[in-house]
Structures are given as C-alpha cells and as structure tokens.
Length: 438
Image 1 (cartoon, rainbow, N blue to C red):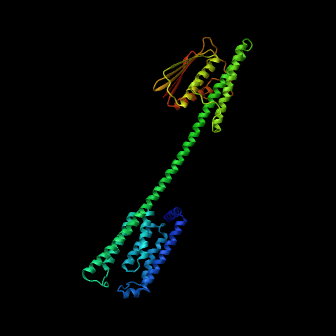
Image 2: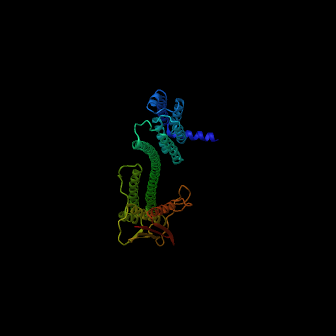
Image 3: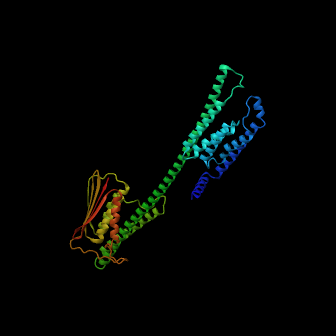
C-alpha cells in the first residue's frame, strides 16, 4: 500500500512538473556531473604532479575523487522530482569529499547552490530544516578545511603571513555565506511567487465562475420579468376584450350604440395588446433597440384609467403629496399593479363597479390603494369555463389566472423592497394596498 501510494505521489509530481522540466534537469545534471568527473580526474591524475611541485600535494586517489564527485553531482538530474533526498545526498557527498581533500571546487559548489535553491523553491515541507542541516554540514567542512590549511608554501613570514591567512579564510567564509544565502533567498522567492500565481489563478477561476453564475441569474431574472410582463399584458387586454365583447353581444339587439362603444373598446384594446406584445417579443429577440412603445410609466396611468372608464367602471383617483423622481422599474410596477387590480375588478365586480385609486407620496414611501365595490344591484358577470375545468376568476386550487395575477403583483412590489396586501371587505368589495420605499 505504501509503495503504491509513493508511486501515485511521484506520478502526480511528475505530471505537475511536466516532461520538459524533468528532461531539463536530467540534461543539466548530466552536464554538471560530466564536468565534475573530468575535473576530479584531471586534478588527481595528470595535474597531481603539478600541484605537488607547487607545494600542494593531492592527498586522495582518483577513484575516491571520481566516486565522491559523481555522488555529489548526479542527484541534480532528479533534483525537482526528489528535492529533499537530492540535497541530503549532495550534502553527505560534500562532507565526504571535503574531509577526503578532493581538489575539486567548481562542480561541488554548483551542486550545493542548486540543491539549496531547489529545496527552497520546490520542497513544501522540511525545507528550512533541511537547509539548516545542510548549512551546518557545509560550515563544518569549511572549518575543517580552514583548520587544515597549510600556508607553508607561501613566500611570506611573520605578520604578513598571518594577515594573508586571515584574509584568505575570511574571504572564503564570506563568499560561501553570501552564495548560499542568495540561493536560499532565491528559492524562497520563487516558491512564494509560484504560490501567489496559483492563488491568483484560483481566484480568477472563482471570479469567472461567479460572473457566469451572475450572468445566468441576470438572464433568468430578465426572462422572468418579461414573462411577467407578457402575463400582465395578455391577462389585462384579453380580459377586457372578452368582457366588452360579451357586453356587446348582450345589448346588440336593443342598444346598438352601447354595443358599438363596447366593440370600439375591444378594437382599441386589441391594438394596444398587439403593440405591447411586439415590444416584449422584440426584447426576447435581443434587438438592439425597441421599435415598439416604451415601457409604461406613472404618466400613462391617466390613459389606463380612461380606458377602464370606457368599459363602464366608475374610477375615481386621488393623489396626495408631491411625486418624487422614481426609478423606471418602480413606475412600471405601480402601473402594472393598478392595471391588474382594475382588470380583476372588471372581471369579478362587473361594469358599473366603483373603484377608488389612492396614490399617496411621502419622503419615505409611495402608498397605492385600490378599493373596489360593486354597483348597487349590479350582477356579477357569468364566469366562463376554462380548459382546465375551473371557471374564470376562480383560483383553481391556486393555479388559476387570478392567483397568478395576485402573485405577480406581490412579486413586483417585493422586488423594490415594498409590501403588498389584498383582502376582501365584504359584499363583493375588495382592497389592494401596496407600499414602496422611495
């Protein structure tokens, strides 16, 4: 199980690094190893006598030098795949090579610096502990080498020799400290930069997902708004047309003028319905501009009330307070609520019903009250049977048109932070009360 888990982790790490990175590590590690092996062979073989004549005899064999150098540089070929084990092997090999006095410094220094950098940049855990242990080993080797340093071949004596030895040792220590500190900081910087990039990528993905969600919600809201508009337009105009057509049929034989007036209302209402449906369907087709009539506003209430008076309703209006500037959505919602309320009065109370429309403005809110009462002795229109077996004006178990109309009015008002209540007052009277903050 552990072996399978280790293989899975290695496979994921290799996939994360990519083939190009692994190939780069293998090639560069191989080149550094070749350079180190050549240097170790050259310094302990052909150049060994030259060093001896200079007073710097080589104290190790070619075999030890080559083996130590290979052990110290070969881990670079898998440094990013195994950052901590690679640094551990490099450090142990460096300790061995240093104590064995192998005269090779180029490849060993490169291996050490690259190993420290790799742990800082790619090892998530134990990076500080590993590098601290590595620096302790490097410091130990440096101290031992400096203690063993022999300046007998230097043509100096006394204070000059002591000063030269001090300068040489301090310089060697400073160079090592600066080099390894730079490798440490560079590795940490690269790791933090990679983490920031990953975090930014994750946040960008989250923002993109949130934007897609917001866009989908906006589209759904817009479709719901248009569907509500279609319902209000069709329900109002078709109801008026049906009622007026029925009234014209009933009086056609004995009151021709009343029948003609009713048919004029049917004609005008049908024309308005077609215009509004064209406008809404144009919006559904995402047209760049709206060639139909603009959305109704509070200024259109007078025409709406006049049309309803033509149907026989006794509509009376009272306005109190000064109307403040209102958003277009609020004006449209108030218009549709009045339209729906009057349509319900016409359907359920019949012609001749008395309707009071009360609009009140305060600095804090808009108050709309629509109160209706059937005319004395008036007869409620006979409801027509619908396709689902209910009667027009009945709730049909909560699914009838009247139920949807009241729900649509409430949704419009609540959308703007307001409240809507409806209640029967007895004897066929009904009240619709809406308040919207302004």
